[in-house]
Length: 142
Image 1 (tube, rainbow, N blue to C red):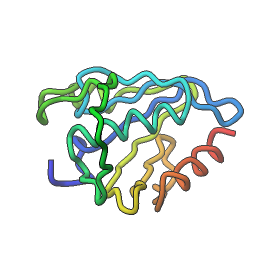
Image 2: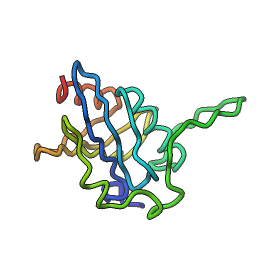
Image 3: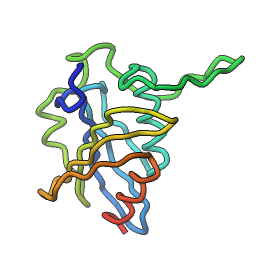
């Protein structure tokens, strides 16, 4: 999965509710063995960050150091490409309020960089940080 824009690297986010800037729904990916259910945007970001940490993809430029063991959090990541959700399931997933595809291309300076590809045909938008991603989603789902 070296191509950061391949369907195997994509994270399909299906929004069921987007009222007041609070998103809820499900996230699909060929990197997951089952969809992630999220009740708010912060939960989604934390679960996706855990997925990327577990799979070391895209690789973080900084590693957090700790003297304690981390408690496992519930993310059903696939052990290898091809062991997760089928491509047709991921591509056809949609939410009641819409959907978008995230391509996270790097994780520099303790944040995310990438592109959002909107389901409605709008031009893809790049983001330079997780905060900018949150702002873009807040504008799309006010």
